[in-house]
Image 1: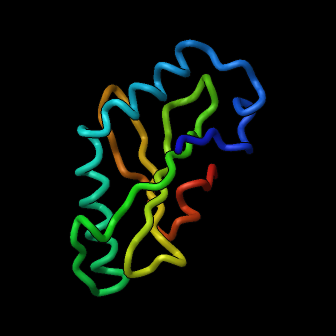
Image 2: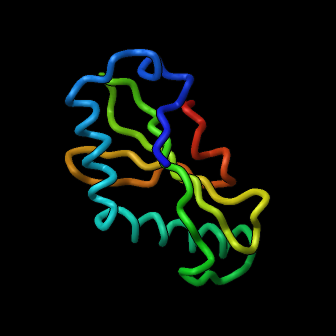
Image 3: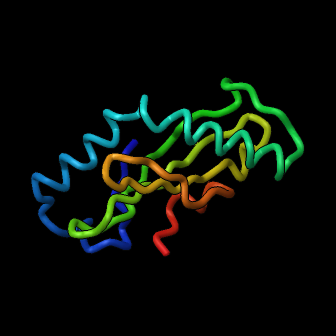
Length: 115
């Protein structure tokens, strides 16, 4: 599921073609950023829970759009974790010049925190 944060003006505006293309490109580029995000989750889980994960322990549930139509791309990713279903994991990622960077990681609420 892809969700535009209801705290953004964009959730009530007509979405420009460029904005829609940015979101679509991010989703279509999943193969480019997914391993980066997985590695960040594996490291975080090791530090937070002192556990090692398997790929099957992590499931992407929601992609949150966290940027206005005129801002730098920022997305929140909400993951289900088999060992902590209640809290899950949230990751924020930015896109700059075609490069992906994880900027925040924590429990699932990190995924939709626009601040």
